[in-house]
Length: 462
Image (cartoon, rainbow, N blue to C red; front, side, top):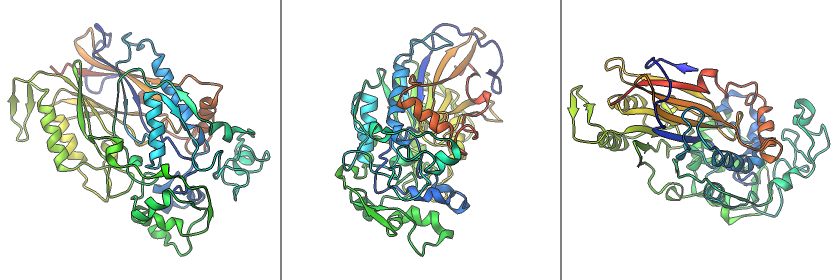
């Protein structure tokens, strides 16, 4: 599909790609046995007051690392982009690499990207979590349990798979990404399960042995989200069981995830600008502050020979032009955290004053979306491309080729990318994700045809 909201004309490639990018987002490397996870909240899915806290558990989460490793292999094995024939030059990961802001999750993510041993297990050897056959309740898929022994098997047709959990916990070696890769932070790198501030009491509980199994008594359900945001440790004060502690579950520090939370990287004709849109005030949605907006303007000026100033006048410089690709976890629509500064319109206004901005890659919503962003006055626009997550259906990455066209335009070709493991643990991960109610086949996460495999036309920016 060729999309012409910003330009029309011949989309035939002219020469090699300006850039060929593999886009991954929302990987959610998960410690599925952590005491600082609150899987029991999934039982409240019918109550709209809990909506921002869901999901707290996925039936496929023990297999996340295997799905990510298979996606990395698929990118490594990709000989050429389907539109330009160019090789992948760089991979970008736009946040939520990990699920629960834990150091052991980060270590596994880095091994998946750099190569090395991945150890999905934590605490005592072997799986010890809510999917264990002896765990109280039937609201979790228990592959080792009797067929029909939980609602996933009895009502949704999920399989009985003896030994799967122990197999999923075994360490394995990964080859790592063979091309350079860039990353940015998401809310799950900052806050507990992507929502709650990691307070000192919670930080101590993360490495401890107290695993909550139900809501605490007396909880005000009308304030449940805000309570979780500012005092998540309160959710550990109800019924609990003892599990094996693990010091490697400690919360990550900001500098461990990304030493420079916002930064630039020039590669060929492209400047990649990475933003930090994570709110330290808690909550899932994003924010951006005035200091970062000021920094962004300066970095944009450096790669523009001409741009529009704040007062609307045109500025000429002696700077060399580059195409600009913006990377962030949150997109325009989700820079809306009510607990922080809401400057999405201000950010969009800045980007639209700089004509070399051609593409904004992001994630967060776990769905495929492609949106044309255009300034009504200047006519300049760019494409915002949001890619679905690897943890949830459709469990895909995206290949992005930027190229000049025979008709004198610029074009961005988007192609969805499946991993290479149909029969193994990664294949099972995708099959399970596809069948999760309201998040799989029956959801809108895959997007429309126009949100997936599309060629996006632009005027040549310079």
